[in-house]
Image (cartoon, rainbow, N blue to C red):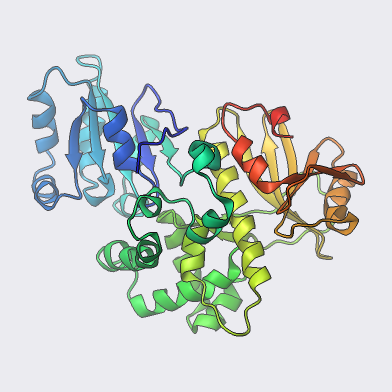
Length: 388
């Protein structure tokens, strides 16, 4: 697969670059920091060397006096290296160094009592591809099936690679790192949780479904979040005028991962899976857009106790958006009612409905946009007003 320019821009200072496996962190680093000292902790020899002797990092840096950038790939595998990085950053006055520390999880660093350099390095995240990064290569239908992980899109057999993705995480991240005592329980949990994708997350219901204790399931969800495989979305409650739900919604970080984990059978309704897939695709785009942008924005959803729901609320600096997502190719006045209800409470917001059709419409004053057009325009450099 040819090199695709990513929207993520490296800070000038030292930074952590977190992201799930397969998002292209190593590829991006080698492309953008070709002259950096590179420590690859996925390499068994390097891993053993630095695990036994973290001081080796200082020796490496001193041995290359001309180097100004140091990359430590998958730093969570040897948390003790952060003490050495901390020391070298403190000696910045003697020699300016930029450290780029990548990882697919901060959980092991937290368990080791590491404070992530006490703010001396910025925290950044690399996400799956955005549609606007792919441009003409983006195909909505294919993305809804395979997702947008660079690892999957670059594979000779994307479907098989996607099927293996969860198994790789189970073996290399969960089992080998000892994150759970019973891998079988965790595997059943992943299966049960797939039915909560793009839905309200009820820990109790998931626990009953996979026959695991409630507290254990809560811990499993936290593991998924620490591994960056999934995330919870909180309800928007600022100056609320109605009674709102308390449960968050849950999403897997990539729609392809959701499709790979979601069991399918005779009782499944294709439209339900398709709707959850499209909503998840929009969610992962909005998260990447927020992460790569320079504005202070946060992502929420809105749902009243009576069941009126708006899928996404983006709120922050110069931004107040309400977005509803419908997979159907046709929309009517009924589909825009939740947005109109939200605007009654928050007339300052801008609202739009994204759907599977091809025409730009206005229904009862609500703008309805083809979802593919919106995603292709969504990029960190585009002003909010240009999205509509």
